[in-house]
Length: 362
Image (cartoon, rainbow, N blue to C red; front, side, top):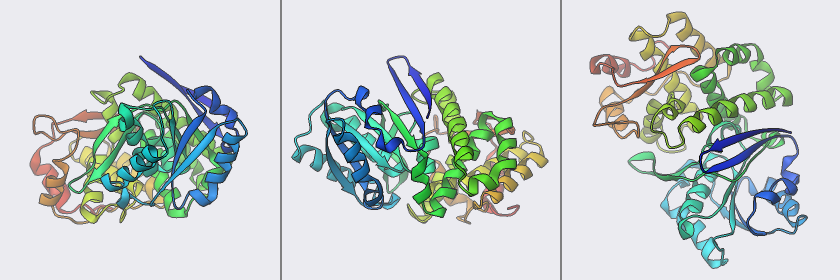
C-alpha cells in the first residue's frame, strides 16, 4: 500500500492506493466518528463489492446500511439524489453517520453531495472502483449533480475523510470504462509533468494490459498532482482550474449528445485535442507536441475527434462553463506538454474556426 496525504487548512486526509484494500476495514476505523456507515453504491458495483466491504466493516464492529442507486451518468440528477436522502432519513442516519461512496465518479459525486447537504453536512469517504474515480474525481472534494442545461452545475465542496483506491477493482471494470479513465491520467501529465507524459508513451501497453505495477504508479502520480493542486487552491479560485484541461469542450459534448452517450473521459479526450489545437493555433504549443498528444490519446484507444455540433452550439454550451468570468470564457491551454495555463485571451474568430470543423486534424 502507498499513502499520500491531502493537507488543507482545516482538514487532512489520506489517499491509500494498493491491492486488496477493500478487505481492510481497519483502514477506515480511525476516520469514523461513530460505528455506523451508509454505503452508497450502484446496481453494477453492488454485486461485486458491496458484501466484501460490508463484511470488512462488520469485522471491525461497524454497522453498515446500503443504498443502491441506478448506474450511469443519466441518473446523476435530483431525483436520484432524493433517493439517497430518503434512504438516510428512513434508516435514521445521524450527523455522525459516515456516507461511503463505493463506485465510480457518478456514485462519488452524488454520495458526496448528499453527505455535504444531509443535516447540513455529515462525514464522507470515497472508495472508488473505476480508474477515472481513483485518479481524479475521488480526490479534492468536488461533489454535485447534473442539470439538463449543464453538467455539474449544482454541487458543493465537501472533502472526504479518506480515499481508499483498491487497484484490484479495476480488473472487473469494462474496457470502455477503463479506457475513459486513462484520459484523466493523460490529463495530469499534460498539466504539470512532462516526464510522466514520456513514461505514458513508453508504458501504454502495460497500462492497457492492466499491469498492477504500472497501474499503481499511474494512479499515484495522478493523485499526487491533483493533491498538490488542491492544496494550493481548494475551492478553485485560481490554479485548480488547470484540472479542467479539456473539460470546457468535453462538458459541452456531454451535454449536447446526452449524459452517458459519451463517457466523461471520452469527451475529455476529444476536448484535450481541441485544447491542444487551439493552443497551437494561438502560437503557444509547438505543432509536433500537439501531434504527440493526439498520438498518445490514440494509443490509449480514446476518441480524438469531437462531434460536429456546429460552432454556435458549442459556444452556447461552453457559455455555461463554471470558469466563465464576467461573461468571458476562460480556457485551460498548453504552452508545452507539462505546462498548462489559464487564459481568456482567445479571439472569438479563432474559436469559431476551430469549432466549425472540430475533427479536421483528428
